[in-house]
Image (cartoon, rainbow, N blue to C red):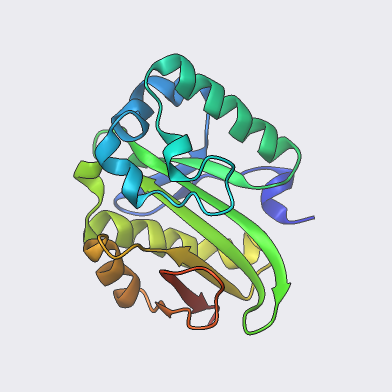
Amino acid sequence: MYPIYRECPVFQNEALTLRLIDKADAHELMVCYGDAAAVPFFNGDNCAKGAEGFFCADERQMENMIRLWQQSYKTRQFVRMTIRRRADANAVGTVEMFNRGAWPHYGVHGILRVDLAPGWEDEETVGSVLALANEHFYREFGVESILTKAPAQAQARRAALKAAGYVPAEHFSLPDYYIREDE
């Protein structure tokens, strides 16, 4: 199995910390999942309720979602991590990653989902998340490439993806995906 499922490390750079999501994060994550303006930026592809299913009207719903994400980690489906700013330790969103296996055109690849509070959907924050993913996730998840979604309205995200070496995934079955191969 992939290293990250044996023990989930904490990843840090100058701007952010990524660590396994915890029930105690529920209150702070409402800034992201309790804001309807954030929903269009979420990647709900292949999720039962789509991106709208990630909206939480209250903390109880957020806690339930966190429980589901924790269970998915235990069963090695995916890893959901809280994104915290290093400057003040506040949570600004989450990142999810999983190994999707081998597929034509992409080899063994992972899907990266990045959910940010609207005030943090900017090039700098997305770029910091991508820097951590690019540094650690290929090895931790055993993938050759990472795909992530950036819908048309996510112009800052698309700019950050381009700066981090991602290019449009021309052969992927879903729209608005970008890919970066391991170096």
